Image 1 (spheres, rainbow over the protein chains, first blue to last red):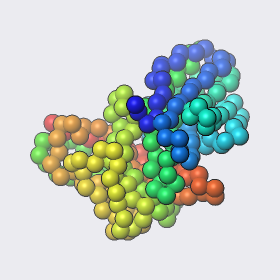
Image 2 (cartoon, one colour; image 1 turned 180 degrees about the horizontal axis):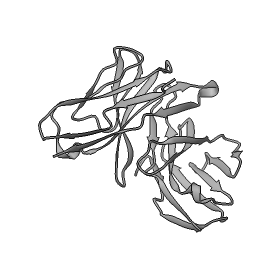
Image 3 (cartoon, rainbow over the protein chains, first blue to last red; image 1 turned 120 degrees about the vertical axis):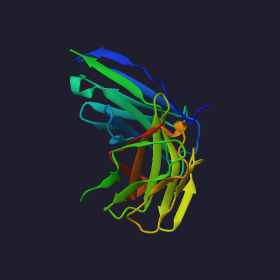
Image 4 (cartoon, rainbow over the protein chains, first blue to last red; image 1 turned 180 degrees about the vertical axis):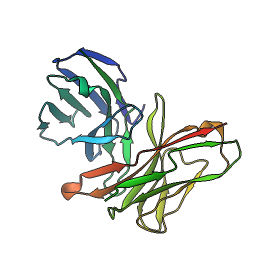
Length: 111
Length: 115
């Protein structure tokens, strides 16, 4: 079983749609959780951290469910510019700073 | 600040050649890492460092060496390039934020083709 798993997609949605991605992780002791965004042939960039109580940043909402060991990302009112690959990232130990990446979920927003 | 810089951007090697991928950051970050990204595989950790003089292996370290003589630099060495090392290589650095949440900053990547 992979340490961090995502549905690779692609998710094809029309503009204005709401779309949600899930990500599961295997290590119950995982400490930190993030969503990164990666545009084609570019480096990953931090989209948002994921906090235990859930957090929102504009149209983006992240949730953490420690009991079921998954995190989610909800995008409301999708824009064409949201088209990208979304990477789920987990840090198992803050002592090492090692990031474990999911393979990414590709989102394609259509006009 | 330049952030995280990587050189070269592109490289073509022949099997058996050696080379060093350069990575530097000017943010005084403790943590630095090297990843490779292959289609359908996501990013996989090659080596990482928690500070100058300290390095450790990641998920796929074979065929690669690293050193961390300064806080700023974290070069990745391919000892004898193989076609399986054709990939996109990303260097990243991070700091520890309050509460243990780290933000990782990535360099623009090096695209390597081994023939």
